[in-house]
Length: 84
Image (tube, rainbow, N blue to C red; front, top):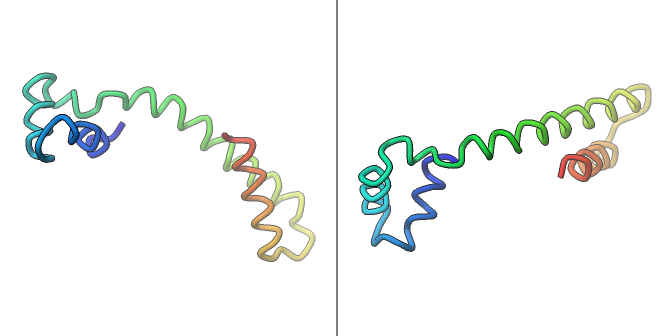
């Protein structure tokens, strides 16, 4: 997770974002702000590669035809379905 997401998650436990920042850095140090970043990256990179790859392959298949909004929309929907 990004540092801002960690602070957002800490706000219910603290009075403000500043208190959350102070709590996280005092308990876990600066590295605590990046807690969960590895897990998000491990899950996000393959999904992004699959999304962009599907979008490109679908675009290549339709490269000879007229591509309009409907074609791009169908490419996006297919890519989202496969990557999630």
